[in-house]
Image (cartoon, rainbow, N blue to C red):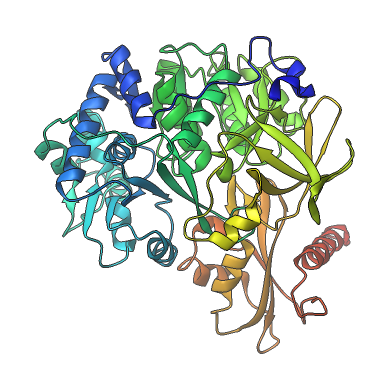
Length: 563
């Protein structure tokens, strides 16, 4: 039982070892939060505020429209949206009709989106109008979202002025999307309805695409119960956060599992005032902080550094920020010290993965926290450390092994990928994370290596095999291996290539070519032409050898005279 686990004694006093999870869907959580105080602020976007009552009515209208165009329980509804009020409404509207939300990064290329749409089969997409041209052909319905519709009227009117800078901003945020249904028409034409039946607690709620634990992009299936459980676990961890009183800054994308849980489920559960940022901009964050100070600011290390540096430069107080969790990459002592010098609480590191909805471990908001570790398991979460070659065999405490997780937040498998699911989920519901860790006697866990070869850059996962598959299409490349090398914001994506001619490839030219096929964060930052790639006896490229060779080469160049 979790109550008997050694790590529980290091929890902040009052945090329970286990939690109860209601037998109800996320839509019940949403309805209950909206009903407590309909006049309370739910969302803020560039200064425009939406109450919980108005949010509830908009969700009901959008759900009514989805039902009227034939969306039925189990159908997939694709969202291709940045953080915005429309994203929140679309998420809960799709769930309200029993559909399955499929989140997509609006910066994905048409090629990337085509592969995902072919996999999940959604026929209805709700898409930022700027990204509509990248959607695949043949969709039954496309709803185009104009972000400017959610701006305050004064700001929206200002963007219509014939000023080059304002025109450029308007063009970045909005583009005509002929042949689509405008989002504003969805809300205007649909009556408020509460007649739709709720989905079940165990029904599929979200398909979240991830490189996963095995390195191949696939859709993780998360049920209503998985997501509800993780929201409750987060609420238990932040036990001093007050319902209806917290201000959460949504600086991470909601199409990412971390942002989805922080804002769309945990934030709504806590009836928080959620300030939405379509992309991170430190100056914009600090402008808002002067008027609406944040109390919950969860992010990744580079965002903490940039925000703290700018706060010091501008003299903006962040003392209101009491609850701060860092994820996605290692949190270093210098960032902790910098952030805690400007904020009002502890900055603690957590650990998660999409397959865990996503958070599974965290450092306590208490002096027992240990910077440099990923903390201890969340309430109702169990862990084991096993021999990666024999995952039924636990390793002795303190020795490195693969981290296994079990709990109510663990996903049900990969969409239409039973073989991949069987590799990730062991009998008994244990999830293989692919991360090599050590655990001390108190349960504090430290990542020492990644068995999987996922590259984490800027908080996003990059599957080397996906990037390699695209680069293989380049006419000058005979062989390629993609690896991650340490950089200032996590790993740098680096490609080692063998060219058909033997002549070096220019990094800039290959990057320009790759940007047409891959999201920007997946495009290699550096291209190194090599005579050959190291291979196993079976002919498999040895990526770890490639990474070691490239790291040694980089170190030698740095140490060379005049470098």
